Length: 170
Image (cartoon, rainbow, N blue to C red):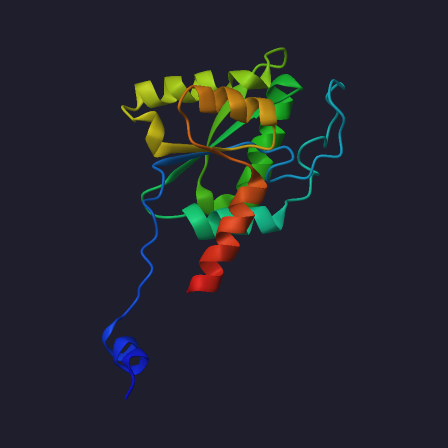
């Protein structure tokens, strides 16, 4: 018997996943919902509810971050006032039902880069350290601003890569 055989019989390697974030903040448009609409157009009925889900990203988020200890918050800019918000809530309840998300909506005329400030306020109100949350967004400027505030961030593509890695090591 060689040393490799002895080592492989006595050493068990197990994967321990990192601690899941307490709250995952998710952008909708272009992150988990396909967005074919250009910026700065007026709201029309069906603008949000008819978006197709980006299933690969949704499943990757499920693999990487879904746990009984993690909450999900949709943080999204919405046009169309109350009607637009209702459509986004309806969309999320249809495609993200098992996430049981809460919602934070930015005002129509507010820059998306304010998401970091909303997350900081949420952390303060819920007594959370900003290092225990995660923002997943497709907008580079939003991620840069949140990162400057010490909020962990990921592009949707990073989540896909992590899910693939976790799948391959199990």
